[in-house]
Image 1 (cartoon, rainbow, N blue to C red):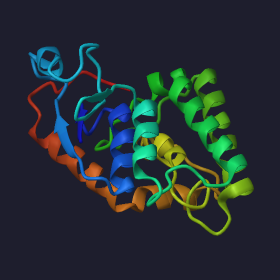
Image 2 (cartoon, one colour):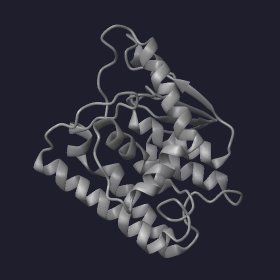
Image 3 (cartoon, rainbow, N blue to C red):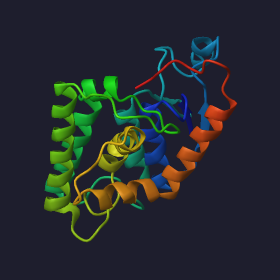
Image 4 (tube, rainbow, N blue to C red):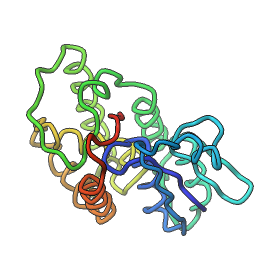
Length: 219
C-alpha cells in the first residue's frame, strides 16, 4: 500500500490515516507531496483526480478520504489488530466521535491550524472556538469515563478515535491550550506514542528544509 500525504507539519488530514496505518502493523509506503511544490496538483493527479490528500493506493484500489481510509485499514487489519473497540456500544461511540471530528469543528480548524513544529502564543479565542473546545473536552471525558477503563486511550486500547483527535492534541500544544487535569494523561499518552514522535520529528525536519516563505497554511 501507498499513502500519499501533504506536509507533516501542517496536514492534520494526512496525520490521521498515517497514524492508523502505523498502528495497524500493515506494511505501507509514505509518499509525501509538500504543498509548496509549484506542480503539486499535477503530481497528485498521478494518484488522485480530485486534487486532495490523503489518498491510499492498494493495488487497483483508491481510497481518498481520511475516514474512509481508516475504515479500509481497519478491515484489512482484522483479526490481528482491532482499530475500533470490540464492544459494540463502545465501537458505536468511537465511530460517532471520530465522525464528529471528521465533519465538524470548523472554527477550531480555522483559528488554530495545525503547526506541529511551532510553539505560538494562544490567540484570543472566538466564542465559537471556545464552544468547540468545550465540546471536544466533553467528548474526550465521556469516552474516558465510559469506556477508557485501565487503558491509556479514549476507549482503553488505541482506536481510530484517538487518531482522529491526535491533531487536536498537537494544536493544543502549539497554542498552549490547557487541558483539564483528568484528561492530561490521555493527551500525554497520545504525544508519547512512538508514531507521534516520529511524525513530529519529520515535521521539524520539514520546516528546517522548506523554502523561504514556507507552504500555505492548512487545517
